[in-house]
Length: 193
Image (cartoon, one colour):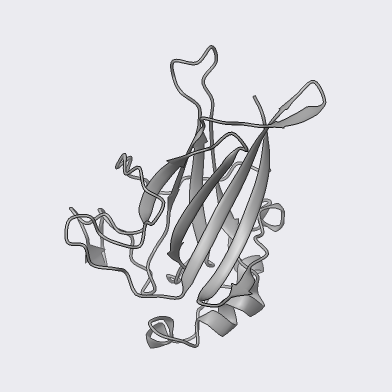
């Protein structure tokens, strides 16, 4: 999978949690369409692919209005808030599962979720991989007709117009499936580690 920029909004909050919708400082739930994202992390070594347990998977993304938490930006300041951020440790099957919302958009980017996979620095050899996952434009178009996304109006950048997506984003696509209360997707990733 291609590595992509972590961007300016990574904050290492150390929030070990699977449900990242709430702000732990206030308990307020971020509005949006429910989205469950499962990472299946594998170790690729000597031509064999095995589940990678005990890896830390961090994710972070914007809310339905295109706002990230705990950052100062020319258009907003959310310093001290911690919504839509968190990490999980992969289990024996190499899985880390998050409950979040479908992301919104902001003017220069297509819809995406950032992720970082790290192994323990105490391991024989530590590892860090950072990238982003993307959504099919047609699914995003459907989701963004609802609350709270519709208040932003039509998004300005689709996948192939995005300057970061064009550097391998087609290999980082999710395949969301509808669930009774939103969407879910699984992202398998094999790391040479």
